[in-house]
Amino acid sequence: LSFAAGCWGCWRDFAMQGRAPTLFVVDDDPDMRASLSELAQSVSLPVRTFGSAPEFLAAYDNDPGCVLADLRMPGMTGLEMQSRLHASGAVIPLIFITAYGDVRTAVRAIKFGAMDFVEKPIAGAELLELIHAAIQADAAARKSRRVNADVASRLAILTRKEREVFCLIAEGRNLTEAAESLNRSVKTLEAHAAKIKKKLGVRNRAELVRLAVRAGIVAV
Image (cartoon, rainbow, N blue to C red; front, side, top):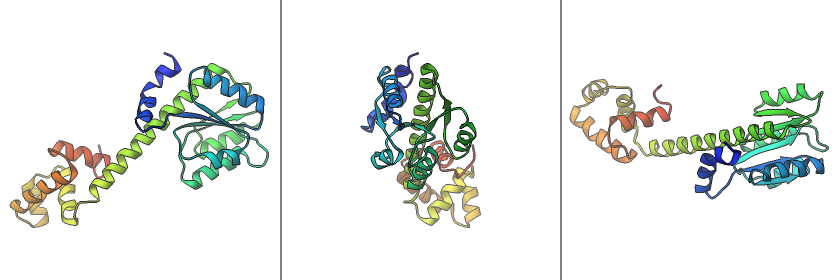
């Protein structure tokens, strides 16, 4: 399975948003930038290269894909760049390139959220697999955040009373049990349930429960 074919699913998701995944290469070595750019282009992966961390940070706009960066760069290190990204709220997988002796620093980067690190010299096929995995992880994470945001926006339009009923139904209570728990009539609960389904755009209890699971209101 080729890199391009294997990543088709996440490429399609991003294409629907008008943003193709990109490999961002951040390295002060021009030869390394050229080599990594050529590697990305060999599998038709869009690539952008930057000679320093500040240059990348100034250009990055929460674009999908992954970052391949050297750990040791003059002016701002890869770890400092990682910290700045987190502080800005940007979330994108980072793969660090490290020379022998930097492994301890690379492990620290992993602890702070980097996806992986590779030691020089870099094997092209192995690196492409890591990039592929990083882009897929980014696609999955962005999709999850979109779903969570959608769920949150839908739940936000419920009134306090409707939220109470929603939670009880999601927990598995029938309308009679929910009515008893809230000290209301079944007829009132039926009216609330109808409004809840309409507001949330669900047709039945199963869809309502799935929505509650996504929102973390009930455990799987």
